[in-house]
Length: 455
Image 1 (tube, rainbow, N blue to C red):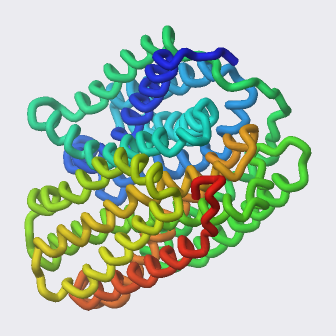
Image 2 (image 1 turned 45 degrees about the horizontal axis):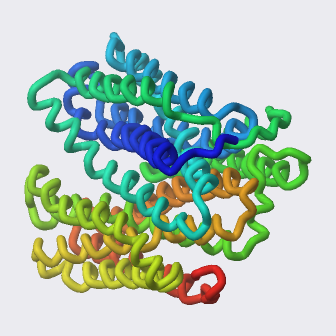
């Protein structure tokens, strides 16, 4: 493992962040071009949404496999391969003559993103001393948080002047530049510890895919075959967990869960992510269905929340350095709780300004919760377990996001019937979020503050 100079290490990390940022933008950029794709390929909204849903499902499926690749492949080769796979998928999407081939391109992109997200965080944590990890994870949070907001803006601007293929072409050009830079500046910083690839475990991961698909599809109605799929998926997932705990060289070492600090940090980052995702789902509905604003204004009113998240993600490192991890997460959890509670109280006032302020408070709280919780969790692990810990956290976070959105959407739709999204349904959903935020705050309070670990 090479000893990188500070200058090389800084450029190395920035190159990883730039690649992750580009991958992240592609994840959220699709929603803007949905109408264009529906017209071009003559497909309904339910079908075109699979460009995002399928992308996310394959991404979650790949995440638990990332530790094996980090341990068995030179990191430079691994990163270059992921960039190439993403570019191939993007090329397929650009020249796709039909929707099915476009879907293939998106799935290839999802494979790259699913393997990169846990891996680049593991690498950054591994090459950074524990006392400096908070600052680096603040940068990671900035990249991942701001990309969610920037994606639709980038694709929207490109569509104003060019066709939909140009959105994919933009990602391709950026990735090509990053690929060429990676050839020169990326180093093999992770020690190789080769071990056998467990095909049985990898195949049983399909159970997780079945569970997520069934949960998402159940929201449109309960069917017998979906319940069977859900049960089968749960059984396969349970077998995957059992196998990881019993085989000599697991794909995903679940023994990290033996550390109570890791478990708590994992739950906190998953809970924080739920709050972030639920806000991005509920607030546009509130602005459009309750306040009767158009989609343009709905998008603009979400900008302050996204900006506050991006700005504070970077500053969270300074807060952690000054107050420690526990107090920083306490600030974040308090902001999330106050934000959701405030939205519950003002929802019936139909005041867009108050709604923007409290939504921004929820997302700002995530800046002091999500990545600090990741840092707190991984600080409890030995360096050789960090890839496994990061992969598990990233996977659980994505699954939690799906389940959180499903629960809130169900509350919203059930209480709102028969008038679709109603005031009482929105209020019920926000109350559920407030209760959830209170639980999150309670979990943070359970953290024992220790001076030796800067908690």
